[in-house]
Image (cartoon, rainbow, N blue to C red; front, side, top):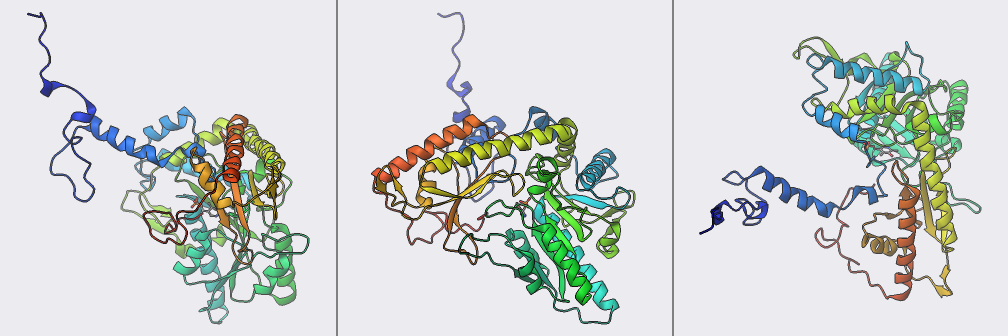
Length: 478
Ligand SMILES: *Cc1c(COP(=O)(O)O)cnc(C)c1O
């Protein structure tokens, strides 16, 4: 007889053979019984494998790389609610320091600026938009004029401004893109802005890095046109800058570019901390260059958390870790580090753009230029392109599909009005997009082009509008 007893099978310790793992996970009802935490963790983690690898997602503007210290700080802050400013006064203090640093980065005067963290640019834009609407309405009321038909003038904006307009009952006057003989115009310009402005315009939004191509809008030119409008017609229209991406790029890589509070007409600026601010997901900022531009009646003072705290936010409870990690990055990188990281992205973008051009079948729309836009490369398929002597028959949607086989996410999409017929593909170059990673991607693009040229691809989802076999039902487009 062996000296040791063999384990009984019921004691056999396998993660995948425990209660909870012996049949598929519950999908509709909360299970009656509890389960082993390690088993549940493993099963959920396994399911998440199918989400793919975020580092290969070149569609997103959001950060997908974080230092170990950021992971640690996020864990340390798991239980901190940033709204409880009395219970977590240091988190509140850190938020204030970030507001000060970012306001200063955007050239606000120290004693005059105010601002807040948000969940991202969307909330930041809502707050900026509300301040514009309230200011306009107060001024109209004071002048005894009607205030029932507010409008907002903008170039091709991110979907959050469409939401703002609908949720807050403001008419959105969006300047369409235009095709030209020599060059297409993918951003707004002063002339078009002026055509749409009137006494009911609550503000003009200019985007520092438009979603569709990555380009900056001509902010200074638009500001000067609005100055002239005020002189000639007496209509004073403020500018809000949606600097979701550009707010943490231009100050480091194009410091001479005038787009921020150095232009007096710019009253508020919003940005995503979790994009090029390098904070983890769930962090945005909105700053007013002067406190007086944030109407008092938008600010709530709550006293039931102990202390009397002014807040201007759409959410109440919100995690504090993202803000703490934003502060970590501002301190850890400093201006020197941010410049290195962002310039590195532009450089890799240039390298990538050249390689895209060298394929010979693509035409660059935008090529990662720090004075013109964000670190992104956007291209379209050339008309009548041929590859290795053979006519190119595939489109960018098919190229996008084939690249997915290797885990790469490179969206292909049509531009908005009036360039709907133009299909482009875009790559965002973010912290962590190394030359090596981009070389691997280029090899896979080459392989995909070969495949598409030599195999007859038929689209399986043509004409299908269901939600289960294709993603056409998805509304989360950009
Ligand atoms: C990403 C983006 C937004 C929305 O930002 P979130 O942080 O995702 O809410 C708004 N405007 C522009 C220009 C953007 O690029």
